Length: 130
Picture 1: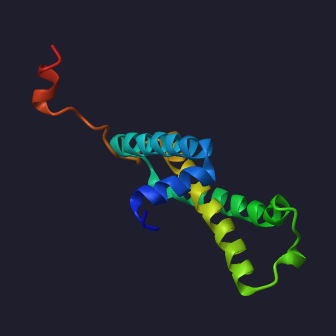
Picture 2: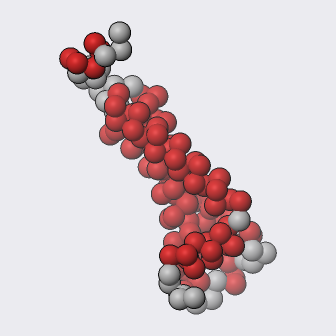
């Protein structure tokens, strides 16, 4: 079995994350559906993105503070550059994931852009429903 073959990577990922992988996949699918719904409704992405970025920054800071404790380590155990870079990357990744997770919810909650019309059905689409 080759090391970087797709089946090998899938097996390694499944072993690492277990059932959490399927939970994350379902959350990603729901998030994608919410993005498509928000796009269809003409959501306010600018305001939602600013709020989501603030939320992501708070999550990133929280993860950065709590991360060494998850492994029963302390900040004194972050010795090398790779330790610090990995610590920062995990915090940044958690913040970005949190921001992307709440972005479509915020876009839907803030509603349509001012002056934007609701999407209309195409002329032939309504007649086929009768």
